[in-house]
Image (tube, rainbow, N blue to C red; front, side, top):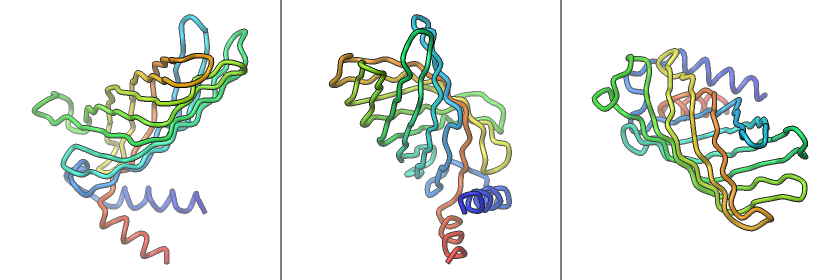
Length: 189
């Protein structure tokens, strides 16, 4: 069922054309499929899955939420689990602000919420926040491949009071108008 719904979303996105993917009333659905980060002093590797959903409240500004679930492993250390749940905001810079090819958009993303990093006996759980720039390459009117570089910090309870994690995210987003999503929902009934 999930494959059918995802195929329907992709088919609808490729069939529908729009001149402005980031205009008010559009939805952003997708996420980072591979999120790689590391620490030079720990020699570690991390992989996350980060689904995101947001709504464009005005042109070039999307507000929504995201969930981040990840696993980390490295030399001479126990595996760890990390998580994040909270709101996010994304702002897309226009052609007047950043000179990029027509099918490319530069954006900034920020988030804040409940976050944690738990590894064996060491943990940090509490408030997490992140911010960073990204680049969206539109393969058609409604689908973009993305790269996102962010700096994340977690503060709170646990054996480590503060945790900092840089990251590089690779993923995709689907941009659909609200009317198209309502039509798809009605067709599924």
